[in-house]
Length: 401
Ligand SMILES: Cc1ncc(COP(=O)(O)O)c(C=O)c1O
Image (cartoon, rainbow, N blue to C red; front, side, top):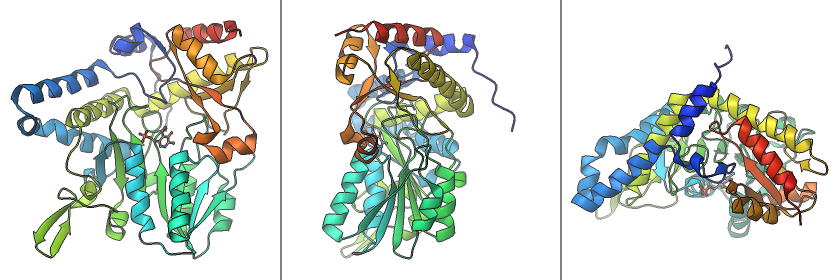
């Protein structure tokens, strides 16, 4: 395949003009929450206005097409059928729905394999599962590059492994775990594969057929630039056949007789009745916006901007960059020679420069192994610019106790 044609400077100007927040802040916190494009913001506000004007349920009926759109748009992005998509509150709910569905089929002694870069909330669920069910949780070691070691994963497979659950891009750095290679191992062994794509959705191409996952969870507000309080779950046809959601309500299933119910068709069974419809509409608009820009072009530009930022930070005396992996995405983590990370974040915020921090509690296995303190996390998106990277580098260099 030829490389995607780059996003030009003129386009970046247009994309920034489309993004109200870029006039106010230097935003390197896209892994926290991306700045919404105006079209997303307008869609959310319009739906809220409509609800206020004519009533919530009536607004829902009038906006039926816009409420369908996120399913089709996300399916276009992931290369799957829209019936495989559930739209939910956030990535945590999406992941929990999948994980606890699989856990319901597991017994004491069954194994879950995960990665060193696993996200805290997921690992907390493993700990609870160990406590409640006596399942075994094994962490696949990373290779010398810091990526999940696919050969080690293969060697750890036995007939007790019921689930491989891996974070694609961790919360604490630019690492991209080899999602497709993991999928190949899972497929060959016939093991269920749950991919947490919360940090990769919107900055990287995600093709569930290529990845070979049974479930994929993601959030709306980060690299997808959607509204807060939105997320989604992909469930493969195989997963839909094999697993039942851990919870039920009258949206997820139909009460057909006093003693009888039937699950909703497709991944809708992982949803529940009430939801943030304005946000859901906004999510559809944000995914369409991403598809219009082109995810391959986004991936290329985000990687290039992040590489430039790493290079600049590494050239500053005493600064260290901590991102792992051969392929590195838009998340850049570093430590400052004179200030702790929270201090850096606070001082930058006072100058309208947005970053966040990553502490050991968010990815404990990896952070403890590397002995890292809380890190500054600067996450770039395609609407950021080289000029912002220059300004950012100068700003962090000037910070003193
Ligand atoms: C890797 C990863 N998974 C899941 C989540 C949870 O996402 P949400 O806050 O949308 O539930 C996060 C949030 O930062 C994350 O970094």
